[in-house]
Structure formats: structure tokens, C-alpha cells
Amino acid sequence: MIEHHHWHPVALAEEVGAAPLAARLLDQPLVLWRDAAGLPHAFPDRCPHRGARLSLGRVQDGRLECPYHGWQFEGGGHCVHVPALPQFQPPAGHRVECFGVREAHGLVWVRLAPGDAALPAFAAEDDARLRKLNCGPYDVAASAPRIVENFLDMSHFGFVHEGWLGARDAAAIDDYRVEPTPTGLLATGCKAWQPQSNLHSTTAAQVEYTYEVTGPYAAVLTKLPEPGTTAVEGWRESIALYICPLTQESSRVWFRLAVADFDSPDSKLRDFQHTIFTQDQPVLESQEPRRLPLDLRAELHTAADKASSAYRRYLRGCGVTFGVC
Ligand code: FES
Image (cartoon, rainbow, N blue to C red; front, side, top):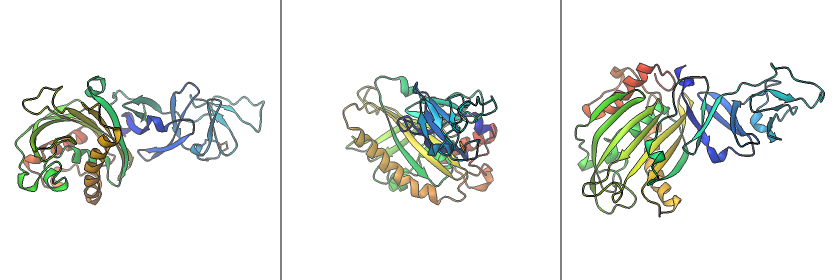
């Protein structure tokens, strides 16, 4: 599957510590752990000896130790110690598969098969004028593509986020532009009238966004400064959506916030994002089918939906099969 060749987030970096951590990606159970140098590793969560879950074990002397017979595996996956035969030198074939692992954006990322795809881009990450923090995880009973599409969709603001990001009597969407990119799409000129466009706003404002799909299950929105303010004076933020496709119809979601607010406590920034996403979640979980239909004839569309239509064309074009139907 093409999805195996892309990087996907699987856990907050801070969660992968001294003890093995169970995770799941694309129906593959994983064990995540760190070696003595602090490097993260990802193996299938199954011992090749008798099939026990490695995530029930422990990390000992920088090696992952199976909970059943204590075999120890080094970061490259080779078994280097069999306690029942202390003099035994395990051959090269005594090993567990290793998946590609990276650490970025406060998350651990895993790739199940080699490939050329880069980590999803997030330009705000290197902007020192913006503070970064993560929200989540949220476990959602919806496919990853349904969640991306919701993120790209402005026409639900007046209904799902009434009084926050929109109002039902001001739900009209001006025309906006969508163009394909090598990693998905770019939508610009996306404007919405919002009663409270961010946690500090006290008056309604017309807000302009750009949306970018940065991988099959990743996207970024950037809120442009309001007219009359500069990028530094005005409220400015980018939010990256990162989704781990757990199964075809369930996902784990994080948001990476990059905001020009260095004063508010983390909890205040997270609370606003939490409020917005937990308004989305029950609607997302109600959608049928849970997988995103790539046949454009399967659901109805208008010009207001052209970002989501372009996303479906992108998924079809790059051959994504997980989470779609
Ligand atoms: Fe893992 Fe035996 S099942 S060491």
C-alpha cells in the first residue's frame, strides 16, 4: 500500500520514554521504545520467538526485553541475548523487523516501508516568533481522510461551531482558489465571518485562511493577520493537523499549534482547540460511510466543497486505499 511509504505520527515524543509503549499504525500493532542514547525505535508488537507482545516487556541496558522468556533486542532489531542459553550467539536471522522512525513536531513518526516521501511540511515550525505546542491525542471513530476533509471545510462553521467560528445566519462562503501541489493541495482566499476567531478576540471579524494538504493524512491551516494589523501585531497562527490512521475506520489525532501568544498558559491555548475539536468529533463519528468515498458521484458537492473535492482527487491520484472506499 502506498500509505506504508509515507511518514505517520504514532505518539507524542514525550510518551516514548523508559518503558515500551504500544501503538498502532495502518492496522499494524507497534511497540515504541528508546535505547540508551535516547533514540526512538519502532518494531512490530510481536516477539518472533513465541508471539508475545513486546510492549508488555521492558527496556534493559538499552535493549528491548520480551516479557515472556526475556530475549533482548537491540535497536537494529537483532536478538543479542537469550537468557535460557547465556552462551548462545543468536544468528543474524534471530531478529525483529525495524520500521523507520523520526522525531519531529513533538511527535514520533513511523514509516512501515521505505519511500521518498518527506515528513509533512510545517513552515511555522521554524518561525521563532511563533510558540509551538501540541493538543491531543484524540481517538476518533472515523477514517483519517474524513477528518482531513472536515479540517478543510469552512461551510460547517456556522452550524457545528455556532457562536465560536461561525453563525448560521452568516454561513455564506465567498469563492476561493484551490490548486494541486506535489503533496496535496493549496486553498487560498478562504474567508469566513467569525464571532470569535481565536481565544483572545472580543469582536466578530472576517477572517482569511489558507489551507494546505501536506500528505495523505496531514494538513495545515494558516490564519492571516486581520486587516489593519501586521503579522506580528495581529493574531497570527498556524495549526497543523496530524492523524495516525489506526484502522480503516478509526484514527488518533493531534494538532500542532504555532501561535503568536507567548503569555497564555498552555492549558488556555489547548482548551480553545479542545472545545472546537470536540464539537467536530460527534459529527465526524456520525458520518456514513466512515471511509471517505473517492467516487465523486457517491456524495453531493457544491462549489463551496471544492477543497474537499480536490482532496479526494489527490487521494485517488496517489493511490491511497486506506480509509477510503
Ligand atoms: Fe518473546 Fe519468548 S516469546 S522471548
